[in-house]
Image 1 (spheres, rainbow, N blue to C red):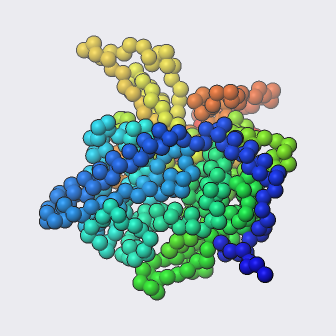
Image 2 (cartoon, one colour; image 1 turned 60 degrees about the vertical axis):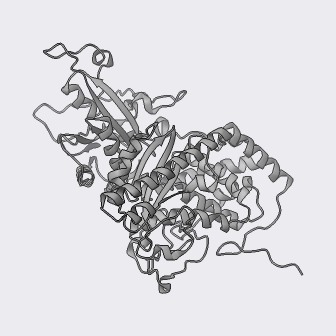
Image 3 (cartoon, helix red, strand yellow; image 1 turned 180 degrees about the horizontal axis):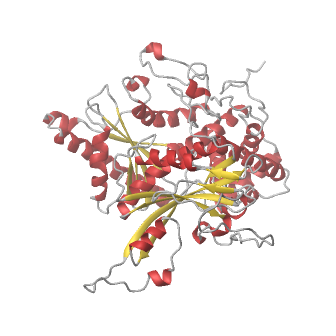
Length: 566
């Protein structure tokens, strides 16, 4: 009698049948579509990534030496403290494509602090030859990070120190959980990113099939604009764990079947039942003493709406940022895709239909909030916009608490603007979201000495699509949500009222700027109305029905929404 198949997850597999001829045909078609979608990187570009990582390794070691010297530490620590760059996420999993960023972690010894990292590393990056570009430190993010581009490759660099060691050799590994002893939350999150990635590949039956299925799910999530941890959607590692769970349930399945079962399983999943790749073990008694995800004990864990739990100690929720609205959007997209995937597996539709672009700006909403972060210089704007982006989910959560907001859907990325203005008045108009006449702005403006007096406005706009409930009230006041959001952003220790600004502007779909639309997309147009409306007089009367109001200050500007907002 043959031995039962190996169980990879917390439950027995659903199906262990080998793939059929039709499964293999669909799989070949999937691989070809991924090639058509440019999901695979050329060898020369992959080699370039390796060289960039070597540069970062050298920089990391130089940083540790510099920080040690600045602290006046003994020479043996200055020269032997080491430091090592680790990769994690999609790059380490082998599921990355052209233009993908590289998630990196700099591990340092006990005597180096996170403050040293943010003090020295941004400047050192700018001094490289060629220098790193778009260097954006975000020390106040949930996971403090420095974002930058090096030789046209986007890098996310985070920091972690190991409190128990005074030297980090190049051959160091992170498997032993003892390195976690004494770690604070931020260090723990950094170290566990690498440890999770390494463990994940050992929890799936066929890594090759897992990687190909993950490429497909990542392409789908990015195409549908639901890929961004910072915005309240699953990030790369959460999507990877969701795919890994399906691999465990269907251990013999090829990638196409894994993708199909992905939508079959998760459209029926009983959230907030957690997705687990292995049983949760609380190993605190063995010495580490770290908090493990447990909704029976911790109220914050009970609040997670779509928990996807990391398998490595200490188990944590990788999807804690998901809100009521983003959960609804994710499930809506999965429902859409379930119908399509059955057509594909039956040979009635091509794979390209699954990966069709999102319709966030073209069809999904009539009303949007445009969150505009602005700063006086390009470098300051990089920092400020990163901070605002990291806090945007708090605005979404505040909006969800209002009775009249049914859904607040954040788009998964921002849009940068650099506008040349003739004067300060034009700058203020731009950062409030107004359009200025560019032909006029591009004219010649000079000061009393005959020199150009043009000034640039640097902004980044983030968008939130709204679904309003007009059955409860005819007025919508989001002042409280905006005030709370502004206060959260302005607690940034580098905030300067003369340098930085933030505005929330109500924008109807036909008022959206052209650059949010891709080539071939149709911008919504204003619908003509035959019903006459009474216009309030200048003295100001009580607001009409179906309006949105928000704080009226130099840091908050909201236009009113016309009737029938829904």
